[in-house]
Image (cartoon, rainbow, N blue to C red; front, side, top):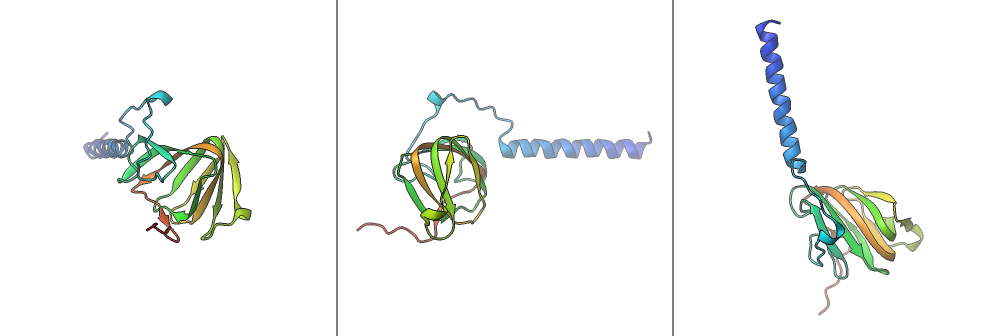
Length: 158
């Protein structure tokens, strides 16, 4: 092999290694996380929590730039009016029955019930709404910063 080819391959290997290391650091892949359900600290405070629901951050923080994964716990009957998120999110229903619909106004006829084991997406800036059919736990992943923006902001009581 001549000198130029060897140097080129070396530089390519170094660049690939740097890019892989940077990608791992950004995704948190270099950090090991092992949590049992008993070790998860649920809170009613969180970037995506709302009165009546609980959240636990598994990795990352949805309020900050970078990847995150969290769980949300909803009580039966909980509803969230049409809203959007600035980031695309992937959601798995771990337990319960969750119903979601897409659009700028809540329409019961457009709700799709998703039992435990179901999966759905929330594309960035696409309005959607939810209704909880029975106590439910979701796992949500995305890349922050995230935050809920209501289509019609809820009125604040006096």
